[in-house]
Length: 121
Image (tube, rainbow, N blue to C red; front, top):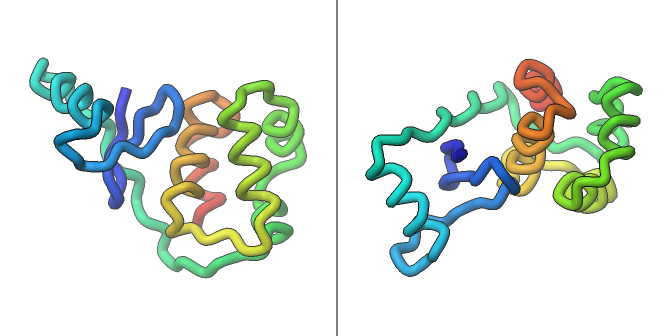
């Protein structure tokens, strides 16, 4: 249900970043989930080098089939990721929204974990 990141916790159902804040309802729900003996997925390994890419260079890292599947998705979070990330002039792999979007593509089955790591490396 949750995944650790260097910037906090991501809820896998919608890719939302949950900040560590004792007044945040999502953080309280996450803490209750942990207290029930659950454990989040481990954080993804950091890419070896973080060199921002142009959106075109980033897009070229996806296979044609992956691009078609992602663009054909009717999932609102996938569409937001596509419009915000691929439309950007520069894609920064250290950006929490980029990482959350890529994690969500894995959650939805549009990418495998291995392909995500390959794309971000």
